[in-house]
Amino acid sequence: MGTILIRKLKNRLIKKTHTCAYRTYSMIELLMVMVVLGVLILLSTRILVSLVKVSTATRAKTIARQESKFVETTLYRNFQSADPDTIKYFDVQNRYFDDGSISSVNPIYTELSAADSTSANEVHFQLLSDHSKTVCFAYFNDISSGHTESPRYLLRATMSSSAADQDCFAPTINGIVNNRFRTSFQVLNTGSTDISEFSVEYIDLAGDQASGSYFVINYVITPHKWLSGSNSIVNPDVVRQVVIFNNE
Image (tube, rainbow, N blue to C red; front, side):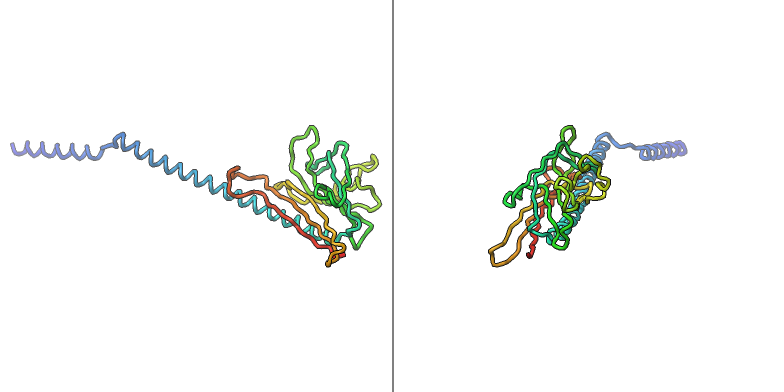
């Protein structure tokens, strides 16, 4: 009798042990775990996306600032050496710069006076040290018919002072292909930025206490890749105003 009782007790203990070993989670517990994991994954994703946006925006802003410094240095060196008596301002329409080439559809050159120079998108001048060559700065912001919107560029070129003003950035001269065309100009921004604004103003100080003149150059450089969205508190544009004194 005692042996039978002991066996029953052992069976009960074994059954209880097996029940505890194979016990499963309830449905509510599983749902709670899934909800917590979902929240953590969502937060991690949002943090990762924010980090990518900040990193991309920071890199784009840095590139825009580097390009701005390059443009500023180039403009400063050239305009400081310009002969103010040789400056010409132009408003040029119907041309664009794309894939390393300049195309135009009957470009229209309108020469402006110094008083209207803020609307000029091209400036020509000769250097004080060398009047045999003309330095040209041109802002290509026009979109020709049949072409989609493309980045805007600032180009620098040189030509003989005896050449016509329209030849500074002309792929052809008098109907003849300019073989030196692709090597005669310098692009002042890369494919990762866009010069969205450009203007030059010339201020003559004749008759003032200081003899000389000022060039006031305004430009805005915008990076192409900007993932922060339109509601970003950081402005992607790099706005610069370069004031250059020319001592005559």
